[in-house]
Picture (cartoon, rainbow, N blue to C red):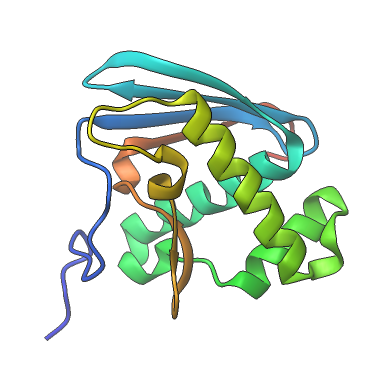
Length: 153
C-alpha cells in the first residue's frame, strides 16, 4: 500500500510552528529568516555556495509536496553537481559538498536559537544515509524566493 503524499516514513525533525523564508540569488547568496509561531527569531546572511545548497534542497522539498516524500531528498552526487554548476566550486566532488554543508549547518546553528533545539543547522539540513540530504521541515514551512531572472532553473 502506497503512502499518501503528505506522509513521510522518515519523520521531519523540526515542528510545525517553524517557518523558513529564504530569498537570494544563485551567484550572490541570500538571506534566511526563521519564524517560530509567526515571530521572527533569526535573520541569517548566507554566502553563495551555502545559498545554492539551501535553494536546491528547498526546491526538492517543494517538488516532494507534489510528487511524494522521497523527492525531498537529493543524493550527494546530484547536490555536488548543482554546487559545481551554480558556483563553480568543487568540480562535483562530494568532499567539497560536505564542507559547504558543514559551513551552512554551523552558520545556521550559530545564528538560530530555538528552545529544545541545540543544533538548528544540523536538524534543518538532514542527511539520510541511503536517501541523501533534505530540509527537515514540511514543504509548506519553506518559502523560497529567487531575486534574479534565472529563478527556477
